Length: 75
Image 1 (cartoon, helix red, strand yellow):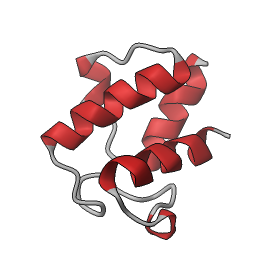
Image 2 (tube, rainbow, N blue to C red; image 1 turned 90 degrees about the vertical axis):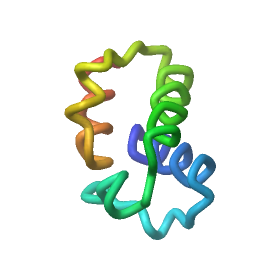
Image 3 (tube, one colour; image 1 turned 180 degrees about the vertical axis):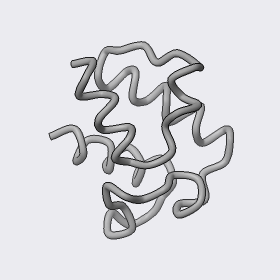
């Protein structure tokens, strides 16, 4: 499931508990991710799923749900 893989990536990168991450979690506001965290997260997602995420797409991905739905459309 895409959600579980994204949650694992977030917990590893941000060193937080999985319990803090739901589909409605805002990656910046709720988890405190900064711009470097976002760049590293995008690179991890691209590697994990074998996809390329353009900078235009990144600017539209705020919540975990948006990330999951975006990936599900590509894979």
